[in-house]
Image 1 (cartoon, rainbow, N blue to C red):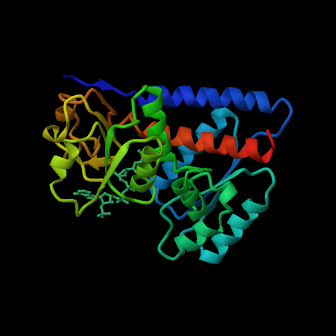
Image 2 (image 1 turned 90 degrees about the vertical axis):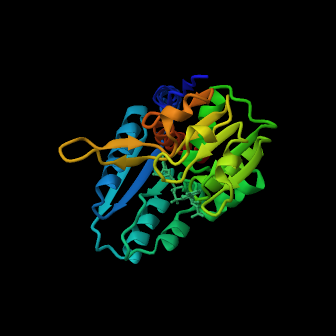
Image 3 (image 1 turned 30 degrees about the vertical axis):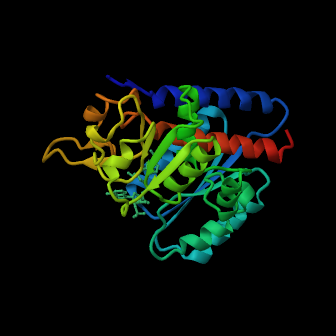
Length: 289
Ligand code: NDP
């Protein structure tokens, strides 16, 4: 079997166009959705992510406010900016770009974001709601994976879903989302025994470890749906451009899977689309629409 690619770029563009149309409709009589982004420090990857998020906001019509702070900023100063955005009626979503510099207490900042503006879905209130079955905001990457599965009409109910990774932002919410849709979920991590055997029982395999190409073709059940969340930059030697790879060895896995997400161009583009979607939903709730 040679797998068909799940085109994350295409689905992301589709979702963004739907969001753009909805915003065009609501802004005939209401203000646009607003997203506040706080970037602390000068991590180049974080800078790129924030710029991409702002460009995406602009394209769909979300009003975005960026607050850029130096790496020397204290926790109290970050908290003051969070409060300012929390009190701003025109702001529906607040995002503090991760990672924060070592001097800033990430947990305190996360807890200061009002859950009803937590469009990243990381606040314990939102994580708790997801686990109890009445979600408000769901973390964007696992939400994006679910969107891909739905758009590709993948059957989830009754299927065995194996998730490799248990981070708070990807693995755990991924498990909760698949369980909520009646998959039989197996959550794996770095201590899981016989990982290749467990993976080879998966109808749906989601990998989020940050370990480049660790999942080999022989781990894939023939016909499985393979979702590769990982993104790692691999050096190709001096003078050559770095290569982006996932946590799954694509060439091998594509020989056995029925559907597979490529890296880049699979899960990645959906994450931003889900951030825009969460921001729109927040605005709709807050505007009473
Ligand atoms: P974390 O480092 O927070 O978590 C990694 C998880 O993988 C942990 O639960 C860890 O287990 C598990 N793990 C690590 N090594 C192994 C192993 N050898 N066997 C089994 N499990 C293992 O990473 P994230 O969840 O934040 O991200 C994972 C990947 O996804 C990264 O490549 C990241 O860049 C990418 N990512 C992509 C996004 C996108 O938009 N496309 C967004 C977010 C992340 P344990 O808990 O036991 O340590």
